[in-house]
Image 1 (cartoon, rainbow, N blue to C red):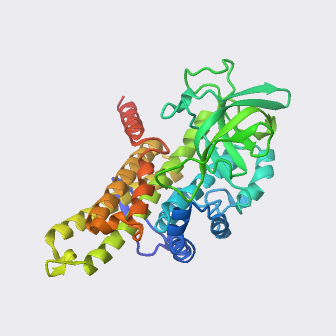
Image 2 (tube, rainbow, N blue to C red):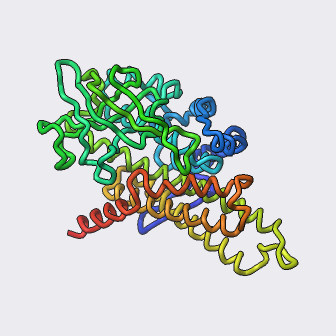
Image 3 (cartoon, rainbow, N blue to C red):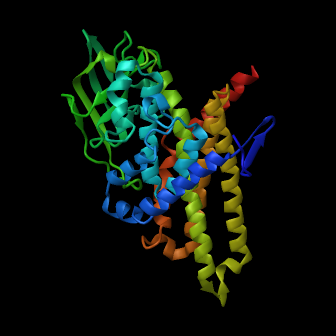
Length: 399
């Protein structure tokens, strides 16, 4: 494959460029965002509109199955390509881009770990996003300690009987499928660790599935979020993804990619904020000149640009490592997620400050970006947990 001049990132012996194909993928996502997302994002946010039709249009480009294999109908791309797509779409609406990322993560788990029957059953609908999937790990009583889940799945013949609840589920009550982590171990309700956790695909319309009220959120208002409740739900054994007891490993594998994508969403939203800030500070005049001419303003936007480029370099490197299955992929995914989401939140905050009072108004996109990006430091593992993972992996390698 011919490699066009592009962005090169490296660390030690690891380096890569954006290829001609990768640049074309990013350009396709940017064009789609400019036409279908950016003009509507403010209204989606203000009126709490879930843009399902737009999401289906994204799937027409393959963005509903980015790293689902081509044999299953996906476009079979890598994690770097996924990050490029998510970053581009988040430039218009981080909430919508993140929602599509979650669907991709759940679909990939089915494709990568599911048996032939569960793949054939669900992927034909998931790939075009005719049906959409949520990822269900967090519970009302277990946040960062995800292995302490209590939702149980008891085998009863050719079904599992599932009882419990999941919290903060994007698409809760709207999506058709829920890729759910449950406890199938011999000690039902045991909270000692990850052993005994399995992964099941549960359908919205299965008897016993219900949903809490749509959460009232600071940001991410274009996507519904709700608790999901399972009251004796009978799920066919064929809906098991992987083997019994592999669920936590599957969940964590999904999160390596999910963390990259949420970091990419932070970069896309923050890049929009920086571009809007440069435009605004050129137009806004104070004390007889444009405020961009003040050195303090220039220093601030220089720092914003530098920090974004540094976070982007680490994120792209981490994406390459996850795609390659490198031994240190989890550490790099955690570091990249932490840096990108902290940086994105900080950049948007400074963008709001440079907009002054106008940045606080809904007439400008900055306040929406500020609200949307704030949650990225919490979900897919809090940034405190990212530090725990990084230190653990680093110290393990040093032994």
